[in-house]
Amino acid sequence: MNEEISVNLSEWSELIIELSSKEIKYYHLKEKYNELSEEIIASTDFKQLYGKNNESVRKNHVKNELLDMANELKELEFSIDYCKRRLNYLKGLVTVKTALLEAKNEQ
Image 1 (cartoon, rainbow, N blue to C red):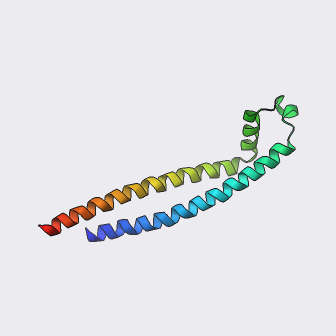
Image 2: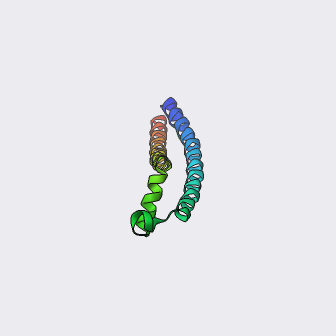
Image 3: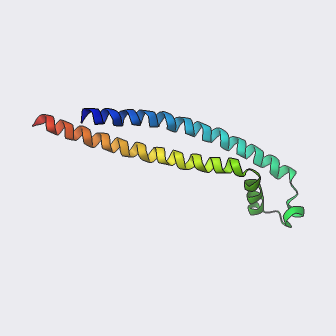
């Protein structure tokens, strides 16, 4: 059981580092996306292209123009969420395993 706890703690540590890295990458990519989005909006005549100029039209146009970046952002969001869920799971798992080990040692 000690070895299992060590493996779980190791994974926990690695996930914290991975999560931090992904959050930083997400932040920088989101900043770049917003910057490019503003440039696209400023340089596009939506009335001429689509016959209207509202937030929905602008948002869809930007998403189509920056599709790869939008997909990467979405993948990072899913990955970050997974890391957070896994960290919570590991926290509970280590707590339970530690309690079981302590109970076993008391007997």
